Image (tube, rainbow, N blue to C red; front, top):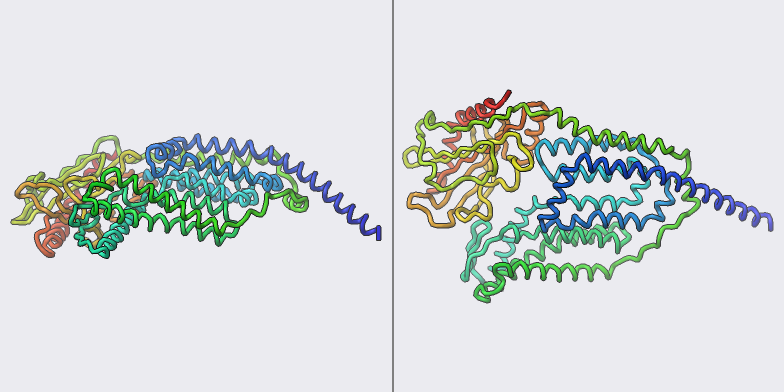
Amino acid sequence: MPQPERQMSGARLRASVDGRVAGSSNASAWRAALLPLFILIILIITLYRDTAMAMITIWYRSETFTHGFVVLPISMWLIWRRRSALAALSPRPNLYFVIVFGGLALTWLLGDLVAVNSVTQFALVAMMVASVPAVLGFSVATSIAFPLAFMFFAVPIGEFVMPQLMDWTADFTILALRLSGIPVYREGLNFVIPTGNWSVVEACSGVRYLIASLTVGTLYAYLNYQSTRRRLLFVLVSILVPVVANWLRAYMIVMLGHLSGNTIAVGADHLIYGWVFFGVVILLMFMIGARWSEPEYGAATSDPAQTISNASGRQPSTAGFWLMALLFAAMAAMPMFAKHMLDPAAGDDAPQLVLPDTNLPPWQAADAGAFGFKPHFLNPSAESNRLYASGDKTVGVYLAFYRGQNYERKLVTSTNVLVPSSDKAWSQVEHGAASVDFGGGLRSVRFAELRRMGAAPAEAPERLLAWQIYWIHGHLTSSDYLAKVYSAAYQLLGRGDDSAVLVFYTPIQGSGDARETLASFVASHYGRIDEVLEAAAAGGRK
């Protein structure tokens, strides 16, 4: 009997000794790995400092993304909570992440070529995150997968859902008002009830509530639940609750204004009431979620057998960690070198963009200010807005040409629209897509119906039908995404970023008349307009 006990005691002693040896080896490996990782991340931030500063600027100026300031500290705290589990792992560089890193560097380059903040900022954060498995290994990154993933909440992205959220808010509010017995007349995002006029604007979209709830809800799910199913379910709830809560908030504000004769819940008050209501809803969501919280299994301990398993094999040398960090630093620098080499083919001269006064028979140039309308496209390199008349029909043509685009001056951006929501003269009441013959084939265009908001001259139209499409080196597309893809492709080919937007508009005088007028004009005269754009592009080329 004593023999097995001595054997078991000897096995425990060997496991303990091996565990201490492995632990010492792990500690040595961590000391060798952390400094190269820290230097690599600092180099990435330094190389992409403009992107990092742009991200911080958005955190500072936009209340929607102010939470970005606390994302990194929270991620660091979450990693610190895992320090016992990490100490049991042996860091080991992973060369396979060269492919991942290369893809992220290319993503940043493409995003920078077309000046898309969300893409470049996402790529920057992704490179910082990918540095962890690249230098420390996949097992280490898996152990802190959530803290690393949480860092992506620092990327100020999400406002692209604003138009859809605004539409849903308007739909629900109007339905709820009608079910409450209040008559409503709606045009687009504007609606009229017996006691006043209302409209759903950006502040009413609920995107701030959604992003705040998703960020906090995801963190709450990670800290309070252990099963993946419960975590995902709570994250889904944190998406649905703020959307529905915003619908109820909008309905309640309109009802308060209606019942009080517009003495409360108007002006700044409705924003304050909205945040109070949202805070109460989120608090209730967390209180309910706490009923199903799961206790943490306990802090990870250093199991000698697990330590031996993770420490098996030859430990990487200090030089190995430094070589891996230098390799990934060189890959991170490649987009900067490529950006320097990809000089636009266009010259520095401002393009000349002049729509013809004649040569569009039977249309003749008319008074350009007669409609009092000009699309809202900011900082173009050149633009032209011209009216053409033929009998009792009038068509407006607006061109905005962009060259040498950057983050301050670019064609495709959320601020370049036909009519901004703050416009006092015009309001967009309907929008969609239509197929139009451009003289050489059908192309999809965006259409919008615009209604005049204020007083107008006697001859000015009350409503306009507008068609919008992008011109990228002769390619036509109505898609923001394809416009960016075409622009990036031409820059990679060394042909520059010359691009333009075309807007055709005409008064709405009767059913089908406006569409037929625009269709006839575009089919007959797009070729001449294309020549104007090609001449503007060719005029500045070296």
